[in-house]
Structures are given as structure tokens and as C-alpha cells.
Image 1 (cartoon, rainbow, N blue to C red):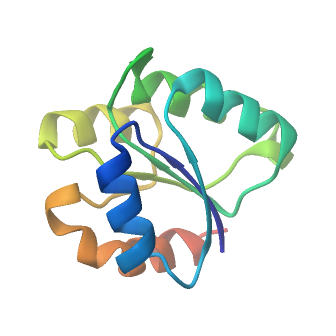
Image 2: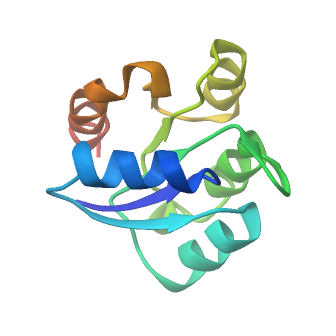
Length: 117
């Protein structure tokens, strides 16, 4: 899968890419602005979105993605480390969650969203 990971913690994104997402093509965006730019210029099979980002909250990006034309919509996995953030991402339109505390389950979350597309 080609995945956009919206995550501003470089230590976590490196850990995730090197340990849990090795079989995927992952692009990391550390800000909402970078994520929007990536989504405007490339297509992705899934987007992993953290809640707390330097230039806003991840639910803003989820809402923006859900307002795009149907051909530009993409499955979204909420990856906040706290449940409050994941609940807000789900409320904005994320398909499922995979907390950073349980990131070893990301493969199951990705399979879940991929089966719905």
C-alpha cells in the first residue's frame, strides 16, 4: 500500500516505518499543510493521521479529506496516542483507529480499511 502518515514526531514515524510498515510505501508529512500538499499531488491507498500536529488538529485534515470529490477520498486510520484524539478523528470521518500504544495492530487496521474500498 502507498500510505501517507501524518505525524510530527520523527522518532515515532521512524519506528513505525522501520518496524511495522516495512512492506508499505510510506510518505511522512509532519504538518497539516504538508499533508494537504501531498494529497493534492499524489494518490494514496490510506492515510494515518495523528491528532496533535504543530499547525492544528488532525480532525481538520480528516474533515478536509471527507469534503473532497469522491475520486479523491481515501481510507483514514486515526493514530493518536490518546483516546480523546482518536474519538475526535473518528467523529470527523476516520474509518478506524490504531492507537500508538497498540501500533503493532496497524496491519489489521489497514486490512480493515482496505477491505472497505
